[in-house]
Image (cartoon, rainbow, N blue to C red; front, side, top):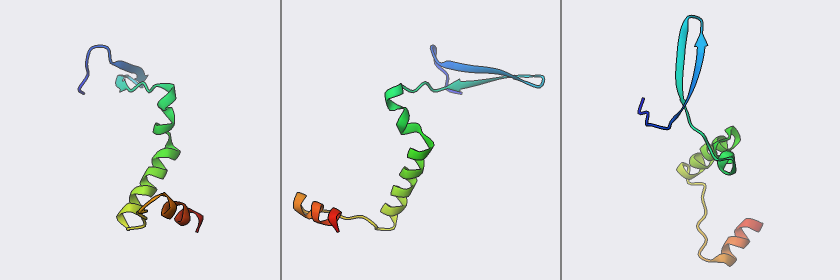
Length: 69
């Protein structure tokens, strides 16, 4: 389970079993990164990159022109 001293554990009772799971504590300021919506958007971006739906701007003016089109 790759546990280390100080790790947080969740302990529950399910039927006649004690279940122990490691819990990752995320700083509140970083919680958005772990949200379901964010993960879905990350998958979308990965698909766009794999499909070649990307644009490389040569400079800031070209980037702004592309964003406005």
